Amino acid sequence: MSYKVDYHMHSYYSDGTMKPTDLVRMYKEKEYDIIALTDHDGVDGISEAVIAGEALKIKVIPGIEFSTGYDFDERELELHLLGYHIDIENQPLRERLKEIRKDRDVRNEKLLAYLNGLGYELTREDLLQRPGQTYVGKPNFARAIARKGYEIENLWEVLDTVKKDKISIFKAMELIKGAGGMSVLAHPMKTKKLAELRSDAFWDALERILRDLKKHGLKGLECFHPSATEEDSLRLVNLAGKYHLHITEGSDFHGE
Ligand SMILES: [Zn+2]
Ligand SMILES: [Zn+2]
Image (cartoon, rainbow, N blue to C red; front, side, top):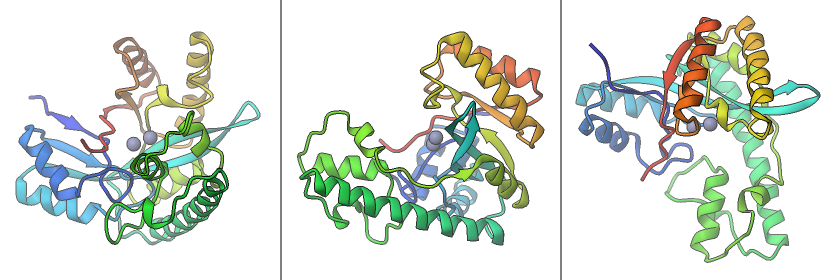
């Protein structure tokens, strides 16, 4: 028997738009069997999603997505790392997430000041979409800018001007493992600074990265994701097989 699964999605506890319960209900209505909630740098939506899953009879796996740094050929790549089956009460994990949240707040203040300096009148309140929101990411900036009626050319480049400190991928894998979970490399085709490479150079680079991460405990590769063409997915599946990695599938859903 085959299951209908989606191992990658975001709720309004990170940069998605939906409440975890509504997200779970939507997947149930679409007849999914197993889903994983993988909010960025946080687990605040997990308890609600798991309870909703129990009530609605759909399996919800506690997950997370870290934005990590990885030194590769004298540059730092940003790799996204998914963690599954994590114990969200794990203390080292929770403490590190608090620090990451602080780094994000620092980045947001600087980015806000930068945008104000460019003449865009945005306030901290403009970035919030609901009461009690604690996570503010670049999509929140993008939505606030759109709501104010501003049009910024190269919007995402502008939003990338102010960088935040990133956790190393090895540290993130260690945290996931420490919390009883497994690490999966997310959407390789979306990796900035790699995706621009010529095809053969890209695949060579990716294989070197996978070999290295596998040595450090990587357990899976997200082979099916909207960023991968059918042909890409086939190559990713081959690579996963070569390095004995689980093959996962995720939509990276952020809300309608
Ligand atoms: Zn990602
Ligand atoms: Zn994601």
